[in-house]
Image (cartoon, rainbow, N blue to C red; front, top):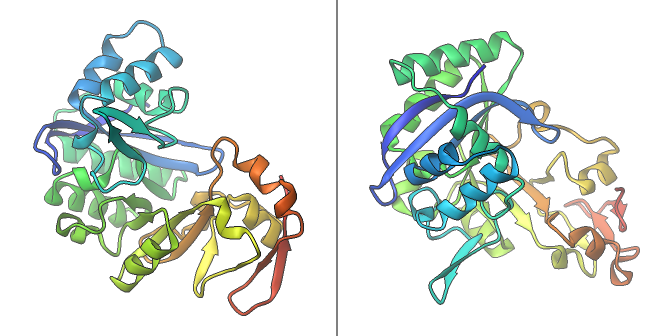
Length: 292
């Protein structure tokens, strides 16, 4: 089934035009999910204008995003910054041409239905009947960029069909995101940020740097490793896809150790050999190097 457009209008961040698409998709980590992508209008136009698919679309996506990232990713996000006027991206989607090919494909192929909400309701029904269990918010871009009334009916209609949430938001510290508390995970990059978000009542998704493990690691009380992480496989023995896990529904504390380029080698380095992973009660549950 082709992706559909379920919102076109101003961004909740800066008022510039954005587009939200939805489609039945997923990957080896998430399992089968109903995916949403949030993109600036100029990015949609760029991927539709390019000749070719895959890499060509991903390149068009990342290039066009440099002009309009603030429309779909809040300035508080730790995965981008401007240095001497140049955008520097560390996001594994927005800054990676190959990975950006997935949202670019959705944007390039999305069709405009006669009625956004009715089309969304129908897609949610189809997802449930087809065995899907989760809505992923978002493949790229942020739910925070979607106007409050729109994101509320998006989530509400999905919930009525019994679909769970795989949802994150980067601007949890701003007043404009408080309507997402309880349904979205606060995306954080340091333990201090995690503590603040938890204190403020958010579920937390902590992308943890490898250095946090050095010298031994004790799991914070109430936290769990992301089920698909190598560390979860070390502790539990089996990987768990997102659609079977359900922890990232806005109410839990989930830690995903960094797994970007070079992190695997860092985890296998000499100084990490034998480093212990312990539960919040102090029980030894694993050691480095973790299973591949």
